[in-house]
Image (cartoon, rainbow, N blue to C red; front, side, top):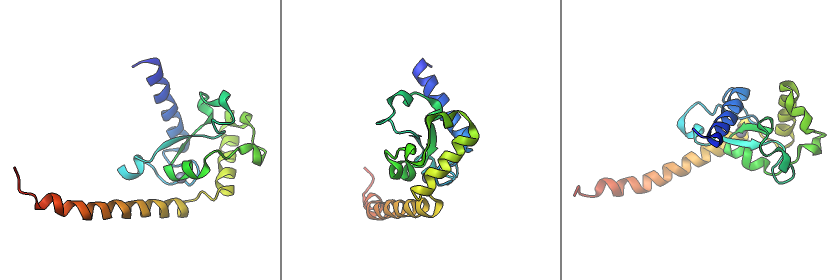
Length: 139
Ligand SMILES: [Zn+2]
């Protein structure tokens, strides 16, 4: 593997280890099933738009579900008196993530409701299309 692939894998591995495979914001277990696994994202804790220096800093990455990453968007932890120096210590990084979760209302209730909605959507799509596939004569 090349340098870029190695770095990407290192970032993912580090983020997964840090949060033990759960979303850093709502705590949903992203290793529970394939649907959740597929929603895994790496969130830039201090947003890329405002902190270009931290784009490649693995300490600035947090494992996140798609819902939380999308909800957090460009929220700047500086609004909570957060500083990039907090990222280098596991305790203060965890504390910062918790503060962000609270202020952005990122919790299991909100994220799982969103996932249920998505799953219902996929089931509707399947219900719509599957009968059409099954009714086709094999060629
Ligand atoms: Zn989440």
